[in-house]
Amino acid sequence: MFLIQRLASAFRLHVRRVSWPILAAVLLVHMLASWCLLAASGEEKLTAWHAFVYFYVTTATTIGYGDLSPGSTQGRLITALFVMPLAVATFAATLAKLSGALLAFWKRHHMGKMAYDMAGHTVLVGWRGTESTRLVHLLLSDTATDDEGIVIVATGLEEHPHPNNGLVRFVNVPSYADPAVYARASMTTAGRVLVYCANDDLAISATLAVGALALDCPVVAYFDAVAPSRLVLAHYPSIEVTRPLTADIMARAAQDPGTSALTMDMLCAGDTGMTNFSVAVPAGPLRSYGGLIDAFRLERANLLGYCARGGAPTLNPPESTAVAPGDVLYYLRQQRIEPAAVFASSLASPAAAMATA
Image 1 (tube, rainbow, N blue to C red):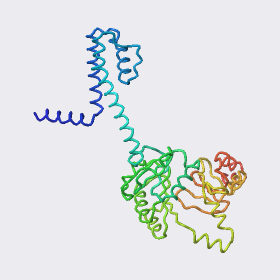
Image 2: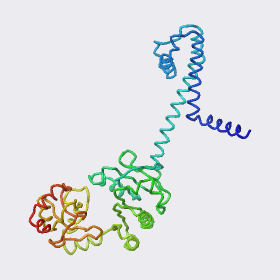
Image 3: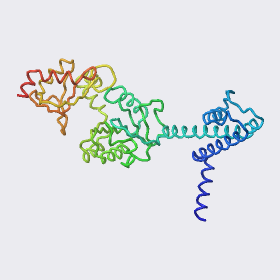
Image 4: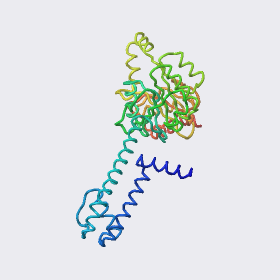
């Protein structure tokens, strides 16, 4: 008795929700009953399986081409009183159910309720209004960060900030402090993570949570003050921390006029002028930093420094410095350089030959 009650309760629930199983069951039962009635009324031209399916679909969709129709009075009455009403109602219910499912999917995407399975993408944690909008634009305008798209992870946003851009996804989270929420953004397989929150309190909680994931990709965090950035570096020294340098730039401009314009030109991604880029040294023999300077100069690029794997960036190291595969080089150029050309020419230079000797 208990089992029967459970089954009856489940059936009533499906009926109230007009679930897909109920729709499929009603459709099959109605099609079978319609075929039996038409066959009993002698409508032989409508009872072949392909003819009946064609007739039923054109009737349900109210298209009614007229090439197949009942010929007897009984067949017409059955079609008018039984086949047409329920077929049209079932088709309308199916369309409404499908539209509701599509609307629910769009709503989940728009409200940041989705979870994404991606790799090599950019994860932007936090939102700072127009500043973040410009950041998204700059990331999408560079070939290094535009391939796999961007996932924005934010709290306090009611809807997707870039709903019309197919390369930008949105994940709405209740808190930045819980490392588990970042799984919906596929953060463990991301190509890079940027923490750019509205204030330092949010940035600290987000950065510490991201640091706890021990990601293999670069992580960059922005702070307005020095103290929180030092706190983060004390726990996770591998995270790259950045902060406003307005006072530093103004002081340097006062001491050496024109340097502020050069600094902005070097750092403003996406703008005109020489910009700072980086490139990883490919597999191969050791190269000398002096040989690389010559090779980059041939490509109209100025080499600034390098970062040994696992170390800190070094500006303008000695030309005799050995640069190994996996190290990162920093340079100034109008556009990103083609790695194959510059590293091939670096091996051909005399300085590089000295390094490999």
